[in-house]
Image 1 (tube, rainbow, N blue to C red):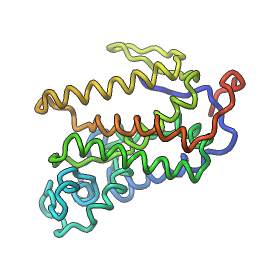
Image 2: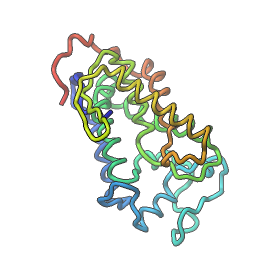
Image 3: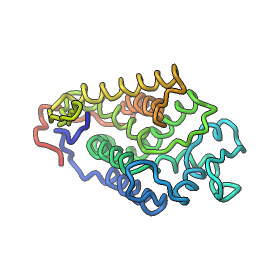
Image 4: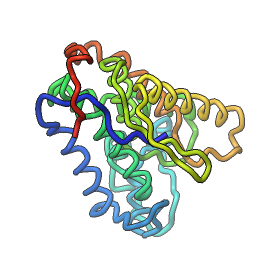
Length: 250
């Protein structure tokens, strides 16, 4: 399922959401040098940035140790391990990774920002990304696979959205083998299915570590989502009743 838009308009411009999208895009193209590739880029600068600035669970659980994923990169690393907790949130592995994350952030982030306010939303977003990484590290403390992407923080946004707007509806593309259809579905169904999928894939990865999970940090998604479910009640105002909101968000 691929969401396209929801039916919850916002009362003010989503300044932080737009800024986060812009930062992620700029980081990918101008700092990571990701280029126009759908999968993992292969440029030397991209790989060295991945080694130095991605969050690697083994480095976090073994302070002072550096995981080498490529040769020819600066040694010692140019970044302290603790900074990777933040830099990794703004790095992506290809245009599909970047585009998918930014689509979810735009559709659901503007409404959560509207309910929290800009300052609280920034704090919530960063804490959500940290919570996501914490669970991934707890589950796989010895992993030497770089963890990158905004999806952990965005998962927190999805959890918050589900609490705030459980009756919202989302226009969604449903893919069936080589065909697709577009349906308007309850947000509860779309986001609930997404979370169930992450939890199941994470479980299968644990049950069969060599089964090839595609390098996706499923437990980071689970951790971020659960954080969003819990933290939103502290940081967000109660939104107007859903039936009072009828026009489509842009």
